[in-house]
Image (cartoon, rainbow, N blue to C red; front, side, top):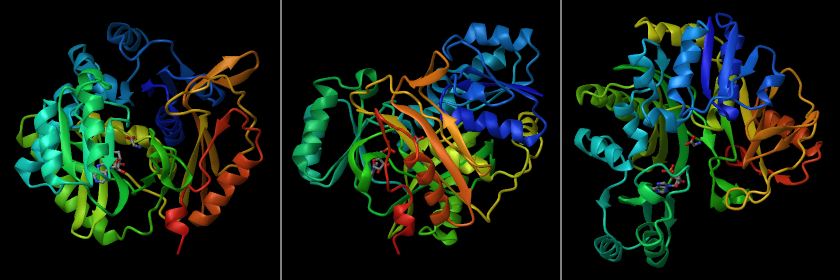
Length: 421
Ligand code: AMP
Ligand code: GLY
């Protein structure tokens, strides 16, 4: 089969790599992709933006691609799957109406409220004054979320009322998130370990993947600003299988059933960002796509054929998934200095010496002469697989520590929460 993958990050590199590894897909083109992925045999890139739906449709038609895999949320929320469907092209991902589960926090919260899916109690506001009044009545800690997409940066976990009010002012007065901040969700603070539970979904059927844990803050010890994610690992030993089973039963299953019941059935990858509270697992957020960087540590564990499974789902058949449960995987993001607020581009990408059980998944890189340079915040991710998390962690840091990463930085404690006991 020939597959077009939409997107350009390390997540799309990992998707393309897994598709090629499976066997039934011979050729993968990533639009727009990045020049780092082109270093891998079988991956090509195509300079078309995900927003250029008409040109992407023409390309798929004229070049006999079997189907399309949509990586990022923006084209999904813009309705790219609907546009492909209208053109008679199969694309894996939710339609626009279903992608609202990520596109609007208020939509997701209302769905959870209607169907009794465990999440933090909340209120939605579209004006400053009542939101401020609510914060003062409720007290801190409290969490302020811009309703729409904000690339992981629209959330403020406020440990005092002043910070919460400042976040509300940012959104309503300074319009920091533009239209994404027209509405604000204010929700209760939840305490516990976070984990990511992603599932392949076809209507009311779903196939959960191994869980993973992201690291959202920029610096070691969870300091600094929130980012798109600085590293991840899988499994997450501090989250027991009983918690995962409970999350599947009380969150994933009722959510996909609710989506179908409401006339917005979900097909694609449903990402549940969860927190294991004393009161059981609760939803922090849903995403309508693979997580980044979680995908880069989860897909290397897939031992079955990803392309065959997606093809089966797109044809209404039952897919098969098998996972390597005997190995741990860990991935660390290399980011440009200043990420996420004041990215300094242009650092040279060093040569990274990886073995057969490790990958470099490229993200924000551009060609410069014979080499590559950093041209955005998250530059690449190094992932290793090993019998234990400690060994996987050791391998990744041996690769990164040996490289000249001038002009870039990475966290030194990815996986530490799992290894501290
Ligand atoms: P989100 O973009 O919704 O994933 O939120 C970003 C980060 O904020 C999450 O990964 C959590 O660490 C934190 N967060 C979000 N909602 C809550 C909550 N209700 N209680 C505690 N922390 C939260
Ligand atoms: N790693 C979090 C996300 O993909 O949204």
